[in-house]
Image (cartoon, rainbow, N blue to C red; front, side, top):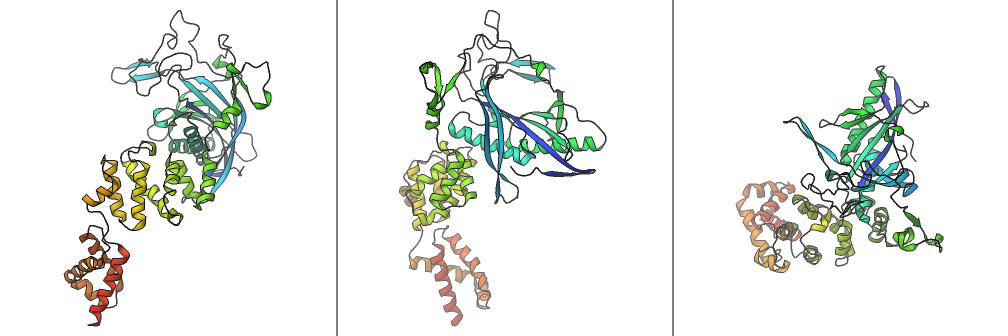
Length: 474
């Protein structure tokens, strides 16, 4: 683990200690203990059973059920990358120990009506299954915490246990933060609740660290409390922090134990129909994000930073590999740029994920093959993407023909465009003849504009240079 980051204050150096509690909504169509559906943005109280509402006559349920005493997993860790430089070129590996992962129910939420001065209760979330992941306090700044959350989010999306959509509340982060002088015991911690984006995780923690340092350096005392992040990026008090006794934990006698075992502990006493073999689940696991990043660098010779970009955009690395099978390995760098820039641009403009792309891989492969062979220009490839993303059902070849997108490779035709540009721009030709050869770039821009970007650039530049040199020698 890297040394903890030291922060400068008015009275000297400070250290921060950060641990996270992360609630990830389990990808399920129903709640933990009822058949009620799980759906984001459903009308208030439309997805509530008698049990969810704890109505009289149901078994005791007016409290949150959690695996507080016997978590489903414990003593784990997560290795992930932290980028300390702005260019994000040299990541360092950081390890955070995971104390436990437990199942629990989500609770209902309050809806505050400012106009009517009323607080209403929506129980749609009550009973929804959550994974609560509790880390050890192994982080020392907002960057490390944000990087941890992002890597966890990528893993959960990859294995299909949570969709990771923080904006929808499917992944919520509580950060426990304290500061202390080097060599002194940990300070009093505060908890910032329900942080709903990776960027806000970083910003909330950094704000809270600075706030606590300012409080202590001004002679004040940090209070153990729960805080929230407001719209201005500041943390504000919500309530005093509860102690363990305030939770009033009690055993739930109506729930049977969850039995876990592995290949080495199979015996006749285990009823395998009611138990879960974790080794069987492990064998079904897809390739994890870090394993895929390392494999991409080895198999395709790409940089680790590009592998990170491909893997962190859900589904993009798989698309890249599918396209690689139909293209030359010499074009790997160009293909990466096409995926990371052109394809992602079209997706993001339409708020689509890679998996929601309306273009079949075969058509994307046809476009890149045409780009690779020089049959179309980069501008025409972008035009093809735009048309197909907007619902054009024609084949790539048909669009190229009808929309006149194929590159002009006939030297005779290219010469016509170059000659016209030279005749219409005598001032630029004169500048070129006075030994300022950089002006050829302006002439090339005019040629591309007149041809609507359809002329092969290297061919056009060669012909333009030959044309200008002949004129200069006259």
